[in-house]
Length: 117
Image 1: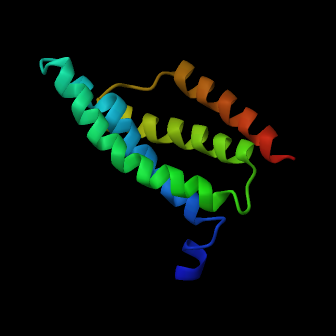
Image 2: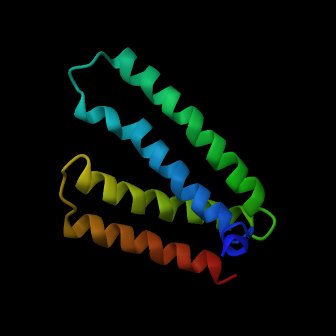
């Protein structure tokens, strides 16, 4: 099991998921604290993003052993949308509309084209 998780095919995906959780909180977490000064939101976001980079950069380096840069970027975008959708509903308490879901589905369809090679 540990060998599968540490493979260059799986580990980068797991790391990109984790990095996107950090990134989403860095970019959008402050929206629940609109009364806080913007400088505080920026500083907090930078601190969170520091850890995001420590996952995203190695994930791309490891993933480049088996994936092209276009495939890695595509994975990143699909993961970003997936993490954001969950974050938006559960943290920000914002509903996803049919248009959001359809738009995300179109992006996922485009991602599928990238992996067809």
